[in-house]
Length: 165
Image (tube, rainbow, N blue to C red; front, side, top):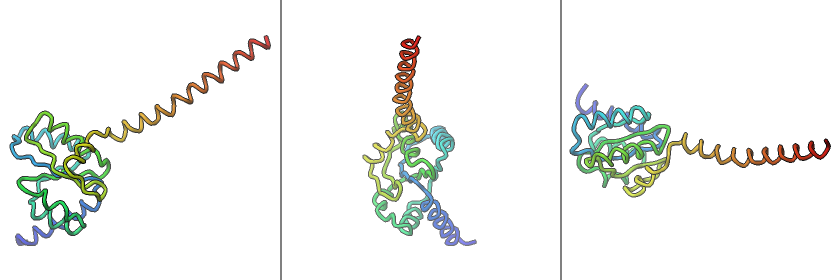
């Protein structure tokens, strides 16, 4: 297999990943040590996020094939891709948390559910809690009024029982 065929295969692979992805976050990793990079990759894996370093030209070719031409201006210097197929907030959240302690990480841009996000939008996205936390908060907000209603009904029942006795 020649060099060209290998590159074409990588582009096809990236196109498939881009089509399935809920979020693709571009980040600069220049200046990370091997230990820091290993730590970041571990956190990504644990969250079900794929973290890859791919040549910018191959990334751009794949992006153009799926209509993400707008990321071209962000593909300068060493760029890594954080791809999530389930939780659109996970890659941005993990990268932003990691960047707090490791100044070498820089959030560049992202494509979230087909929309281009600039650096500011990616940082905002990173502040959204995980889906599980949002669901727990939602269920908690539903449970509270229901519990109060049940308490009121029980108080009315007890009051009636006392009146009948």
